[in-house]
Image 1 (cartoon, rainbow, N blue to C red):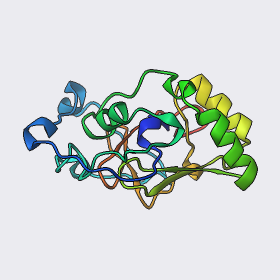
Image 2: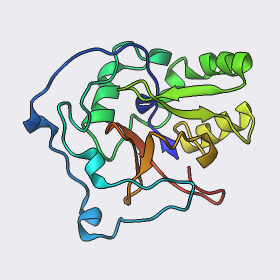
Image 3: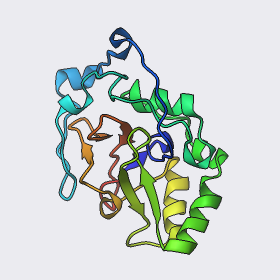
Image 4: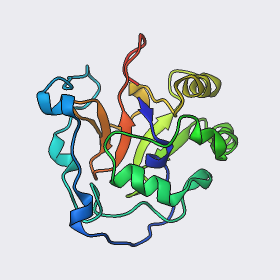
Length: 185
């Protein structure tokens, strides 16, 4: 699962509103034709398109939190997480943040790095599992975005839609499931 770093971190929640007219979102042409639909193997938990229905703030009830980890840009994160269904920040953006350094410290202290929903603060991913921190970073560098495997996903609050979009139950766009020879990611 290659995920936008903007969708998976948190601190304190800020408040902002936006009109419903600007929160209308639509899927792509292939999805409209039914050619983009997939079902991913377990343990991937499939979700319904209704999770991403327009809400108070795009596809979520709240904007991203105001104090994001790793120095991520709040405006970029809010646009990607709440007003977007297809894109992410540019490939390698996460390398311009303090993520690698701070995640390494967290891993050395706790044996894992926790990733939270940028809107709600709910736990979404715990990595690495079944691989080393170095392997997690290496795959993420190769992929261009943080890349999580099935065992690293907290399925209580994460779903994959039939078009491959990965979302939180709160309506946060997290990225896309782009399986490779090793499985879902």
